Length: 460
Ligand code: TYD
Ligand code: MG
Image (cartoon, rainbow, N blue to C red; front, side, top):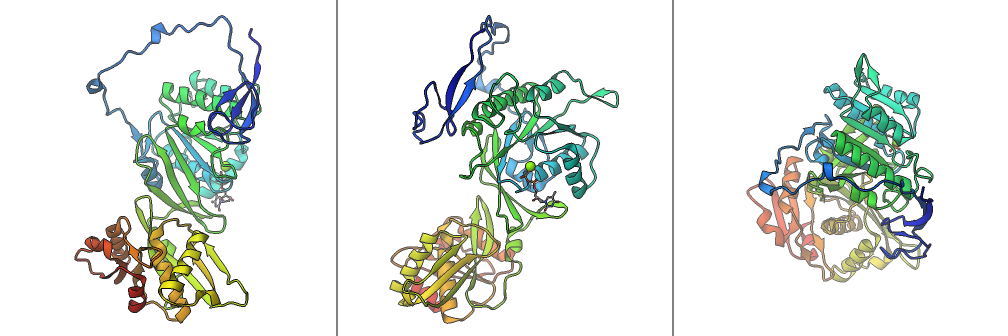
């Protein structure tokens, strides 16, 4: 038998070399090469797949209606998946520890099994007792859901392909499998620790093969590194059909599920959940959720509408402006880019003539959301001025628009969606860019279309 040899893999792109290098020759990242062992090729095996060779087909003869989907029973999850779980698909669910990946998947298992599907939940992280304890918080479960505490992937595969698991006299062949998590499972023929690049890579490849062969939909849980990518090779994301990220912060109880890759649907959809003591609940109306608890008639508070994918979400922007006691005024930004805030302060100083250098400014997106869209700039300007003058902006006012360095208000994408969302929430006034005038139809909302931030000062 050929000897196993040590090779080095890049953690990011999976590039393989026989020598260690400081910089990956594949993706040019530094310090990403880690050692792994390449499995020995079984001697005496020649590639002879003549019997199972595929032949090219005409595109018109390929049937497209083979895309069978199961509804997960969780509307927000279905939306992100593009309308349900596709038969035989492989989905990677990434996210920080404790964000609720296992909870979400267990809840999905519950509704899938209630709908008559056989589901297998393989956990390498928790004991069966721990899963049962979590399940008890979520609710009643059907016996079509089976739990397995196993880290050896070969055993999992054997159970499925040999139909050796007999339940009530019938072999248990699941149509959906959850692997929690890919970093804890291993294949016996690979001589590396679970979670290492070679294990993660080979295990995913093996799961992919049997998912397609047996037409089983598989969900893999993947841990996220400090940088926010799934630990292990970046390749993992290329191998699977769908990559979902579950995010949110530890303080706020809402969670966002985002598709970063989806071979069966759009990546623009997000799902919003809230963690409660009975598990994750869907948030059907995120705007209402984000604006709940907003103070009435207070200065320094405005409402804007941000887009998450194609979904408009209204959020509250707060600013506090007060005289500074320092030589350098303080600027703090929570939920919004810090540099953007310093830039907006400079624009206000120059174009409106408020001497911001004498004032500390704190800007916050209430509710713990993080927004990178420039469309909220105008709302920040309004909140800062409102706090500076200590005068509240009337309730029911939506403000959005990008602010440029000369104080001009620039148009933003999907303005009509934002206005429609405000109307749905019962808002009566909207301050928006002149460039988006076309988006104003005969809505019940009074729209002020402006082209410069000085006009904003006159209106508020
Ligand atoms: P978990 O699903 O274990 O996270 P992950 O698998 O992503 O690491 O989430 C566990 C967290 O969720 C834990 O901190 C407790 C909390 N939680 C609730 O608040 N309510 C619940 O009903 C459940 C099941 C968990
Ligand atoms: Mg978990």
